[in-house]
Image (cartoon, rainbow, N blue to C red):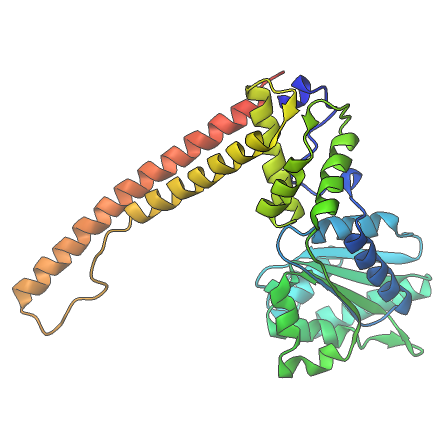
Length: 337
């Protein structure tokens, strides 16, 4: 939509991790250096943490794209609450090994044999776990046990743990001492500063074919950095809305007033959703007082049921409104320029 109006080749601020838009800031360059250093060690764990939206998944994709697949076999897992036994099944599936109906000892034997075969072919195995903060402690311990596999004193398996800051907190628990001793490199992603935020925005625009239309006044970049706290995903979301606003108002210049108007709209939308959500949650007793008479308890129960029915009706209305809003936004984005 706005990409046609501004003669862009593609949307510059899409949220998916497209490595064509990888911005090699000083922060991300340093993170990649730590990850590559960890790879040279060929063992243990490399840990990268950061707030949501700081570019962890983009880093993983950039690293994988830069590796020589002739001497390394890579598996990528986006974790959830995966128990230790299920973790072994996921690892098996990731590397194309059968796992259905197998017990743990069989899975471990098959995985170890796979590691050995890869080593004999001159390859080593790397597992990258994204959103690793969701892994339970027993799953982290299972990964540590897999790191013990070796052939002739040479490690067969290495793990990259990439996740939010809770991951770092978990790894410093006393019971994680053995895993912590196997960490060969760690890095925490920080937000972009004001200058990097400006360069990030201009970089993505230029990658999308931007030719100074629209123009951006200098003071808008500091405001974008302030509101987004320099977090790339938030920058993308805000800038996407700013360009949509510019298209709808046929702006050739994006100034501070335009950005502040979009910020105000976003905050009002957030406040509206929050208020409507609270509106569908009426005050009600969470339990029936067993000391009251039978008739009083029946009355309280009937009131609770009535309130729940009212809540359900309002929630349905709110959900319908949200769906209609999303359909409207989809129509806007899919409309031909």
